[in-house]
Every structure is written in C-alpha cells, then in structure tokens.
Image (cartoon, rainbow, N blue to C red; front, side, top):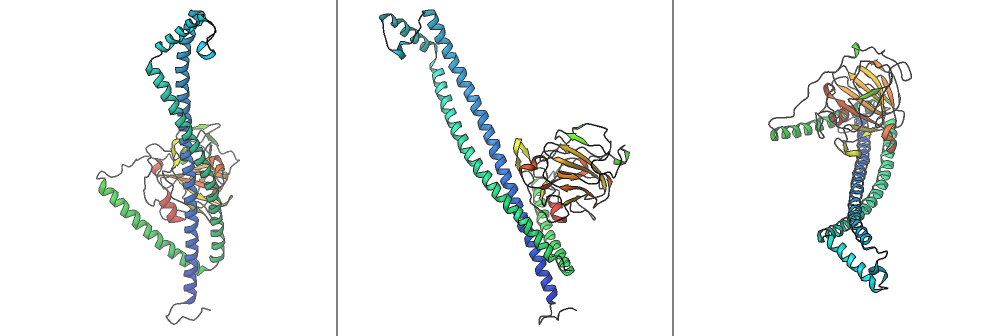
Amino acid sequence: MRAPASVDGTDPSDTAAEQAAREIADARDRANAAADALFQAESDLDALQVEQQRLENDIAVLQAEIDALRATVEAVAINRFTRAGTDSMPLLTGFRTAGEQAQVDVLIDVVNETSAEDFDQFDALNNDLADARAELERAEAAGEAARAELERRREVALAEVERLKEVEEQRLKDEAVRRALEIEEAERRRQEEEAADALRAQAAALDPLGRQTQASTVPDPASGTGSGGGAAGSDDPLIVGDGDIDEPLPIGPVSSGGAGGGLTGTLGPGGRPGSDPGVLGGAGWLCPVQGPVSFGDTWGAPRSGGRSHQGVDMIGDRGLPIVAVVDGFAQAKVNVLGGNTVSLSGADGNRYYFAHLDTWGALGQVTAGTVIGYLGDTGNAKFSVPHLHLQIHPGGGAAVNPYPTVRAFC
C-alpha cells in the first residue's frame, strides 16, 4: 500500500527514494574523490623517487669527476717526488733539515703543473657535490612525508569504500531507490558528457587537424588453437611476459587467439598521455568490477621509472568478481608490474586489459558478465591497495583514457 500523497502532490515514498539515491551517489562521489587523492599521492611519491634517483646519479657523477681530478694531481705529485728522491712532505710535517728545501721546490712544480683551471674546477665540483647532497637530503625528507601522506590517504580511501558498501547495502533494498539512483546517475553522466563534448570541441577548434587515429585490427580469436572457457589452472596457455605489451614471453604452448598482455602504466605504441576518446562502451557494456568500487581519473599521471599511467585504477575489496565487459576471448597472462592479468579481445573490436587480479576465473571464449578473475593486489599493486587496473585499446591499438567509459557504466 502506497503512502498518501503530500499536500504538494508528491509521493513521500518517491521523495524518500530520491533522497536515498542521492545518498548513494554522494557516497560514490566521496569514495571516488578519496581514490583520486590516494592515486595522486602515489604519483607524488613516484615523482619524488624519480627525483631522488636523479640526484643520486648526479652525486655519483660528481664524485667520479672529483676523484679523477684528485688522481691527476696526485699522479703529478708522485712523479715529482719520485724523481726528487724524497720521502716526506715538509709543508705538512715542518722543515727538519736544510735539504728539505728541495721538496718545497717539488711542491711548487706540482702547483705549477696543475693549472688554475684545474683548481677552480676542483672547487666548483666540490661545491656542486655539497649542493646535490643537500638537495638529496631535502628530497628524502619530502619522500618520507609523502609516504606518510600516502598511508593516510590509503586509510581514508579504504574507509570510504567500506562506507559506500554499507550505504549501498542499506539503500538498494528498495526497488524505488534503484530506479531513482538510475535517474540520478543518468543525469550526472549527461552533465559529464556535455562537459567532455565542450572540451573536445574547444580542443578541435585549437587543432584544425584534429586527433590522428590509429586503425588496426584485432586477431580473430576463433582462428587460434587454444581451447575456450577454461578456468585458471586448466590446460589453457599461461604467458609470462616481461611487462611489454607487444613482447610477451611464452613458456609453453601458446594459442594464437587473443592479443598480447599489457604493462601497467606504460605508454603503448602511438599512445599519448591525455588522450580522451569519451565514452567507448555501447549497449550491453558492463562495469568490470561487480561490487562497491571507487576510482579516479589518473590518466597520464607520473609513475616510477619514468612511466605514465595508461589506465584507470578501481579500488574495492579483495576477491570482488571481475567480469568481461563485452563478449570476447579472454587470455591469462603474468608480468612483473601487472601481476596476474587478463587480456580480453572484445567482439566490439577493442582490447581490454585487466591487471593485479588475485586469481583468474573463466578463460577462452566468454560472454559479457562472465567472471574472468577476482580483484587483488598482485604485481606492483602490493605497494598500494587491492584494485583493478583497466586499460582500453580501441581497435587493439594504443591505450586511451578509460575513465569516461568507466564513469559512465560504474
């Protein structure tokens, strides 16, 4: 039995549902903001570590130059003293006999043979070395502060995901809330798409040539020799890669179906930070993480080793199901950075890369919604929080920013 309408004609149950939907949407926004802050802290720390490595390399080079210059001066001194037949340095020990005047002459010759430019260079190098060491100390202190901030943001992000889970569990029991939430999310997506369209129009106006696209084809998984539908641990081929998208290293029979594994956070062939294709998923495209999840737009953010982030990271509880976003062919792979990964050659012509999985699910030929793995922290995610790293490669080519697509469907 429905509650009676209010004086203004609105249905109280509808109002309550709309309020509950707003609470869920707000909880998702808070969780996403916390995830964004966490990944920004990771980027800041990575940048500081890159700077520390640069300073350490600079110090090593300066020290080598100083040592080489010192060795040159010492060689001149040894040569002079050897020819003079002396065994002490009176300028350092004091004169004991009149014969030590010869040693003074030798030292004068050493000074004369060492140019003023050498002495100036020696002094400048020592000054540069002292400056570099001081800068390294400051960078190390900043790194410690960044690590503390990262830990704080990690706790906040995980707490917001937990809060989101509780809010969704409490509010989504009501079907009316579900409908209101769908309306709320649809309106938010519409506003975001309008803003993205405006930005793309502005960029097109500034660049008359527009963005160059890369046309390529995805190998037909059906032409492969691998069996489909198997789970991890079956006879399906497992490729262990060195982290390079294009050069996986096979260690056993390899199916010709499926595209190569990816490297978390690397720049694919022809890829470029900042590329924004808008929403790529069509009807039937599914959110890859089945459960409460938070994420931020970290495309192009700096990563250790001079890499840039080429995906979207989605934080959730370890063990959440990861599903195929579209029909396609799923192949399990392992690499150093991505850990346990799946490469999905989609029936829509795109390739999807899922990294840091705890374990695999079904592999081979799969339909949208099939569980292909479970959220985890393998690879370099062990230094972060359990999350899915998702890449989208339109047409099997260069990676593009997946955030707009994930934001629209998750």
